[in-house]
Length: 270
Length: 333
Image (cartoon, rainbow over all chains, first blue to last red; front, side, top):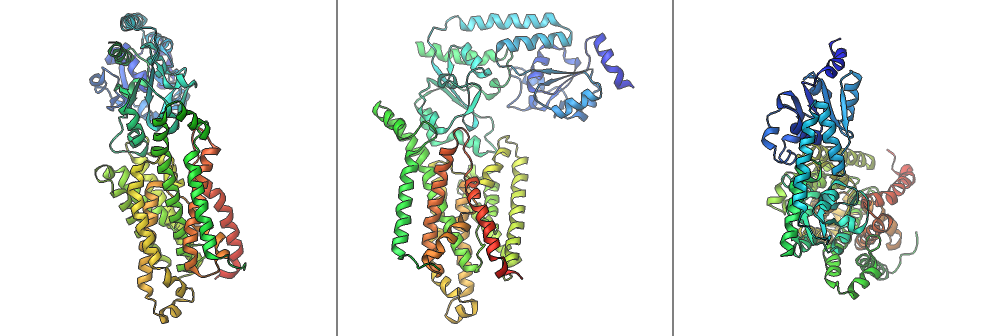
């Protein structure tokens, strides 16, 4: 009975026990909700490769969940936020038990980010804070973009298994914000592709990244970023070390990646 | 039986075919990167890039396709002759899967980061362990118990591989289960060639040295012993040679099935039934089959290449079934 009553209670006042099941909703929640109202965040946010940039320490202070229904029930949440494509079995079960679960669509650009920030602000009952966060983001972005010229050099962001972002992806949005094109955009494909190694070697990017947080213990895929052919490409190409985490979620912290790219442009121009 | 082809003609033809396929493998790339595209790049002053593609990407995969194919064909012919069992093959009897288990232990534990040669060495040790277990389980019994023991060893080894890869903290490890079970030489580098090929060649030499005993053994163990063949020593050499070559091959290419099963059967009618004559041509036949299959995966698919073992299984599995039908009557017990 108590469980069945929860949703109506939740709508009366701002939610007091919020659980996040997803890396990207974790970051928005930490940004917009008072910490005492956050009951649990996803385990990914406490791993070194997943922690929300700039909030690594803060993320360590919450109980974590692995996207399993039982762990969520433990907190008797009055709001659960989830990624639209993650932890689906748990989300289905929680909805069946009449918990309030809200899905967040993954961000493919900064408009999606603004939409998700506003959605989260409204959910936690602080839309004004969402607007402040967005305004600060716009101001900072404009500052970074002030000195970017019209040229659009090519940035090869080489992921594990030669996973490359093309048009209409979040990495492309971040890259474009700094005045670069991704190699995938230059080749002209939509979404993501595992580019054959030979194709990759044909490219002459102006800037590249080949980084993985997963080096030890290794896997063949993560070791292949050290393939002799890629080492050769790296030897003749300018490098920028942007951690993989920045390509996963769009948040105000994405500006750090934009800035790192923009600084490379400034260095080239000189 | 067909009249045997003159041996040098057959071996020479297979060797020439191997060279032809090697050349093709160096010239054929994924969609849009064929010979014309490369020539155009050369003409536009990008010889460096072409050289990198050919040397660092195509050469290692081609060398591995040839060496791994040779190993599997040779090991299959050797095992069929030595065990006097037409269904014997390193993959079928579980040596390949045990080698893969050894390689997985070395690679995903991080040991191979510190000591790269642990990758082939652990794979060879896995293959040896598989051969010894098999010997204990089914050493002297008939064809069926050998195949059943091989199936059990293979299942166990694959299960342990999946346990290890699913438990790895590296999120990409679990995706590589398919590499170990189906095999591939895509994007293997010169590092892998240097790690594995020396051990494969060593295995070939050991196997070649045990070839003379093979012919005597075809008359039965007692007859061979009366001809002065040291059975125990021969068995050890065959096991060592197969473990060395198949272990090293599996360490860098995963388990590629059916090559060692199919190739000796196709070539046997052409060389007559003297088992030692089958060894070299089966090795060359294996190299031809695997290099052709590896060209096939590049031509068939563009973005994500098929695994080599998929192609060899598509060819080999129906062949295996027809084999069982053919020999069923003769070997029932």
